Every structure is written in C-alpha cells, then in structure tokens.
Image 1 (cartoon, rainbow, N blue to C red):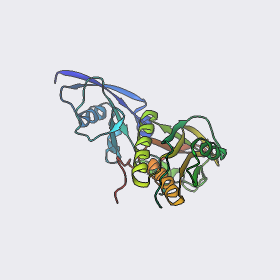
Image 2: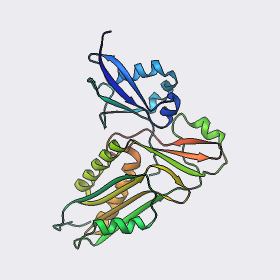
Image 3: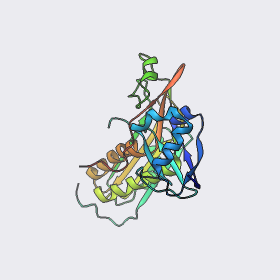
Image 4: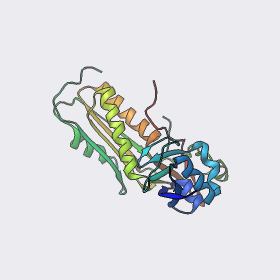
Length: 259
C-alpha cells in the first residue's frame, strides 16, 4: 500500500500507559478510515487490542464512527472509558445566554458555587441550583480492562483521584450539553467546571451551576449537566492507592441519553 497520508493518534488514560506514549504518528494509505488507524496502532502496540470493545473514537475533536475517512494531518483520539459515575413553567425573561465551561488545573472549594452564581445570575432568575462533586474514600467501578488492578487493591481506601482530560474536546462536549439543556429545559445560564490533575480526598472535582426563573428547570438542568458530562466528556479518572492506581469508568456515550 502506498503511503498517502499521515495522521496523529492521541492516547489517554489506560491506553497511554499501555503504549507508553501520549501520541503516535501513523502513515496510512489513501482512503484510510479510523478503523484502519486502529489496526495500524495495534500493530505497533499489540497490548491495546484487548480494549477495543470499550473504545470510542474522536476525529478532529468530535466523536466519530470507525468508518470515518481520514485526510492528511487529521487527529484521531482513542477514547477509553471515561470517568463515569452513578448517575417547570414558562422560562420567559429577556436576559442573554451565558455559559461558563472550564477545565481547571487549580483547586477550587465550595466557594466556587457562590462565584459561579454571582457571574451567572440575573434579576430574571428565581432559582440557582449548584452541584459540587468531591472525591470520596470508597472505590468506584473499575473501567473495562482494569478489573485485575482493582482486585489488587480490594479492601483498600482511595487516597486521592487523578483526572486526565482532552481539554479542547471536553469543552466542545460541554458546549453540546449546554445546547441540549437550552433546548430541553430552556435554561440559558449554566456553568460546568471540571478539575484536571490530582484532587485530594474531600476536595471538589466538578462544579455545576444552573440559573433559571423557576426551580424545576434549574434542578433539571443541573442534573442533566452532571450526568451527561460524566457520561460523554473525554475526562478520565484514576483512583490512587498507596502502591498503585485504578482507572474508573465506562465506555463513553457519544451523544445524549435517549428517552
């Protein structure tokens, strides 16, 4: 096969660890697809093959099917299971839409909810709903392929969490979620702020704030924001123990929940 294009593959979380690299440039033939890129990647790093069933793909920063054609210079991200987690009235008003979508490396505490409310709320809003997700000591559900690692740490308590992100794509997915919230609930003032890096026990890893004229819409928007962010945004979570770590989560959902 004559080489016609070169694509850059980005690796995250458990895949990054297995391959020992964050990225690989692949030479592929004209007409190659994401599936061809995966095949070429596994030829270089056979240890990645077992994770295929739980894998999702992204093409130039957006989720895409494996038959997506590639062009020279494209980026393909291999998306292993993401961080996961267990998951009225006429809005009216004339205030403008306002979104705060951020991935932060610096820590933030409970005061962030007051900060976000101050930045978002208008005189049209009669409800401000905030959600703060904090690290907990008890372990979560290991990502597919991490079962043996979880077994080694069975019965132990989590010491901290480490988050890894695809920042540009995470922000794009958060923007899609905000658009869906506007369509579904009429809420146009929303914040989603997520940590990147190590988060000690008891510290906040994600903050949500939704402002609306009525409480039903604000509650619904905040719940939808956290559930969809955890299910879809390319953000990975590792539970840190004294002598190792376990990646947590489920295969990424590429679009909104049905029903």
